[in-house]
Image (cartoon, rainbow, N blue to C red):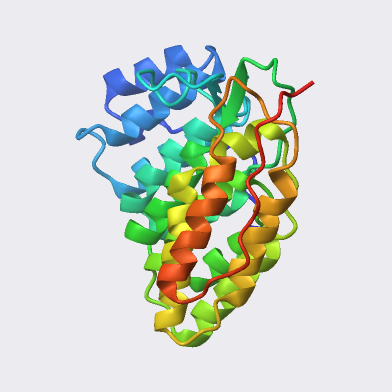
Length: 291
């Protein structure tokens, strides 16, 4: 991992227009969340024209964000469709993601370095009585942006896939593997790493129910279709997804959260029949109340 040095020296007055420098100086004693947000906003100002100054503002914002009180944003449980995806907090991950997304246009090499230094999402365990769950949307949207606009390539995606430990990574990584311009060898290596990591994921009821919906399964099916088109055996991926469902479906599930389980199994079997890869069906498993 690329190690970011200690907090950069404050920009001198010559680096910013006097009024912006005064605004920044007055804000430095405030909460780190607001200081980081201000640094990001200053980096976007048309009055800060030098690319080096923009880069330094963003680098400092990244470092300051490490002291944010909340590691991630959160979503409410059960999710409310009409509400925002995550509670409106200035979290460490959210602020660092904003830095990287803006750094892509300023210095793509530094954007990749900063992302490499971010703390990756990890599994969490909570009972069905929980009212909040961490949101990793900022992290994975930033990963998508690095591939779409930042020049990220095969090594980063392979590393992300091999280190995948949370079900929140399943949909975005399947999407990136599905859509990338990979060589047949790269595609086969990514698919193998995805299947192996999928087989090692252990999750609780909340994470499983929040992530194992039709959107994720459709990405698995579409990735399977791409493997078939590239003449790459899809069986390891198919079996890994089926094992994931079989392993987690019998667990007690939270009645207040969406429960797609039995329908997912039937829909996946039907999709495989259309792809020409039918498998023995998974027996429907009734929803169970979590204790």
